[in-house]
Length: 354
Image 1: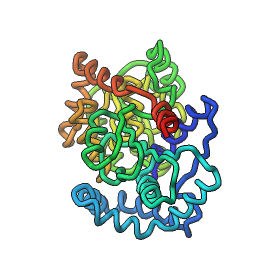
Image 2: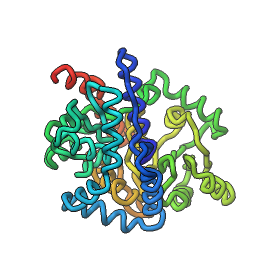
Image 3: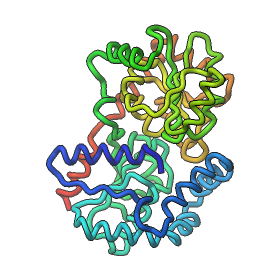
């Protein structure tokens, strides 16, 4: 549904093709399913922007009583499953990997009733485990943290391994992070000195981004640098009100993370995981309903991020990471330690064993 799923799939494809394997990528929402994909995207965006309480309630209900909502999604999944079956028949793969929860549910049902005879892998892009990622017929679930893996197993995942996030090589630790960050500051016209707080809200900039920037702007000595993604209206609105330093769509996120001192995130997804691998401390604030709150809870419990639950908590959380070297070092160490394996290795091991 978001760029995080697509980017994870693209990175896995890059790793596999680099080892000489052929990869065919399929976007579930772009399959010829009677126009359902675009409608689902639009409905998802509408819920997050106009009815977040409804979306959050649905995710909580699904987490506690998964079977009713899984039955509802299964009832309307026929066109998607036919599209996936056609793609599998066309490519004749040795393994199918899903990075999107709805495709994982479709593929799990297909594996259970024999329509998919090759191994199925689900790579869970979220640190917060949720039943909508889990189908007992899926051969292997891969998680970004050990805590996520334990929670997925408790939800019925048959076989689980923790590998760490699927992030591009540019986010890995580099020999001279300071020089990379300084170059990024010059490239984006940012001050050469002073603390930068990178504000991220995903490719569509869902959530209370403007409110976050207003609260953050009151923190002394901190300049908010806002990743507005595809939301040009948000960027123009922040520019008009002179709030922080808003940026449109940028490809240089690794450089900006090297330049920043802390990430303010509301989704807990791929951008957050990229920051952890880079060595950038994370504060979660005003998490998105549903999956954002599940991710915030998991990241906070694992010590991978600070969860600022109220407006008054954001400033102290940011200043704490900026001023307390021990707290900063501890969080950075935990973040880099989540990389314990390679998703591509796990996928290929499953193929070899099949």
